[in-house]
Amino acid sequence: MRRPFLFAFTGIAFFVFWALAHPSFEMTASMTEWPQVLWFSATLLSLAVALPVFGRMMGSRWAVRLASIAGAGIGLSSIANIFEDGFGIDAFFFAFILGNLILEVSLLVLTIVIARTFRDRHKALALIPAGTIAGIVLFVAAGGPVMLATWLGAAAAAVLMSGRTPIPATPATR
Image (cartoon, rainbow, N blue to C red; front, side, top):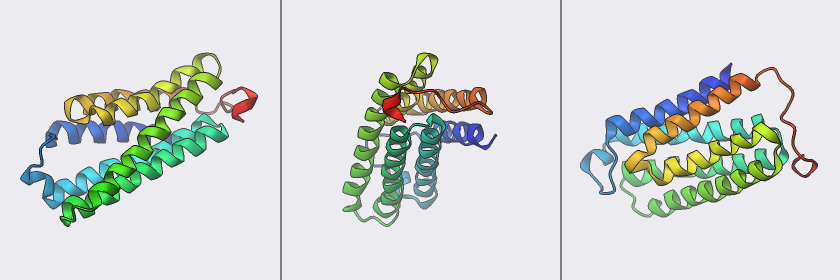
């Protein structure tokens, strides 16, 4: 039952941060205050942990690799955020963007892999990486609710799949 809890926690963490911190496109004074910097970085770190777990839940070699790469990308962004906003080192902005770019590209490929190679009802699990892309891209406007719905969906899928054999995939994904 740890997997559904992790997925639900990730969605809730993003929603709570989004609802209470009121992120914006403009840099505000509160965005550089240590509690908010650490809170945002911890929220990103929860996604960095959840993504590889999601990949292992999918069971295919490609899903595990792509989800792990995505997790490493957002992990980089989490650490870069501490240096950029917390310590005020502007050069870490590029590391933050690089981490997000790695996340987005690997999630896009993961969405395609799941949609094209998994069978039947498991194709719907492509909505998890796709929803995560949408949640990150639209974070300021609607990212909290999108991430909440996406990762609560992942938690529900994890509950439904617990105790079952790995997801059947086409031979190309094994």
